[in-house]
Image (cartoon, rainbow over all chains, first blue to last red):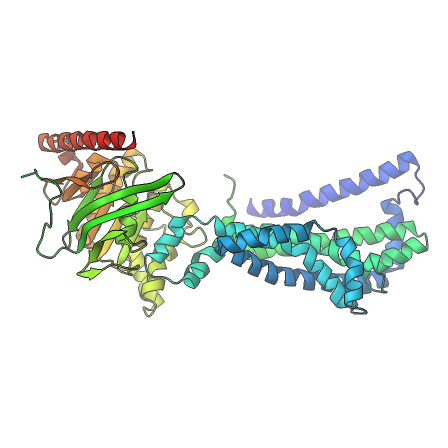
Length: 257
Length: 274
């Protein structure tokens, strides 16, 4: 029974994926679209295979910089969320700043950063991944902490527990489900950040660069192959977060009965 | 005998003593006095229930005794010491069992020991927690998560948690208020078992008059807001009680007295807020 459920958990998304690819192929075939309008999965695979070495090298560059940016976002987002969640004045002070910052289209920040850190391609890219992805983490941690029911605090405070102790024993673990929810959003956002830099400021690295080269060479199937590689890495990172969530906040999941 | 207003000490040296405690909250609509010269004392080993109209400052009273807030005037004494900040010698249970969802039941019960008895070996902590859980009939559920338990079972675990560090004072803020009638009566009996095995001094806040006379040695009726001690009823029942004791003529008489007093208190609130 349990084994069957586990198998289904893998089979269902896999089937959905295959159906999606089939429909895509069908759509292109029915409309007889040329591949500069839309490449079909049948065209994309050869394009990928031809440049599979580049995909590995560039894919890795994109991946590690995205993960580094996301890690920064986790550290800073959690810290900011912590201060905002524990103190009302800090929350009131930071919210407009954060929202304003988040509202700035990040594409416009790319050239500014390119001038600020000339030639520091890794740093630029990581910073962009960080900037675009820390907001959901900060907000969710802040909300998780500020909505802690007072009774939870009282049971420990009445015992003379310090603020730090209350945070470690109660506030922190209680916020984990919200934190992981935000991390799922942030993980995919971080990819957007990395690729913004890689596409707008091509510097010969990452999948964004491969996309740009494909565009210049009018290699449309390759462009689509890059997009799918990005989607694939996004899914990969998402499932890594899911596994971490199961380990650290698995208690929050209720089995449907 | 059961006459008299704001009767003072019931013993030579009370464990908990409040002397003319007053407190006023400042709200958006102006100052809201909740306690007005409240004087209460509870002897060591005593069990006092506090009843009164809703919103009359009962929960404020629990927070004052726990040292979670300070009164505007008057003093709170515990063990002959003035309470100015939280003391680790208090155990609390609320209407909401506030169990930590990420911990097993036994780990939830151990929580206070992690704060006040940090030197205690973990095995001993766990043994103590398991012992208490067995007293309240939660054997076999020690390693379950709170979400796997019923409301009544969670409240039992919450009671164990409030007692695990052998507190001097047990503060119960309507812990049975959200339970169905039968579960509630189960828990009343468990309270008697606990009191026998793990003697404590308790202050119970409740809306349920039957609960107050079934559990307490003394029932204090608070007047409407701002609250003062309006009436004190010594409960005339054997220490070992069964639910049948609630259906005797004597119990009916006590309940009638309390109901009468509550009506008076409600009248006070109505005229005060009018």
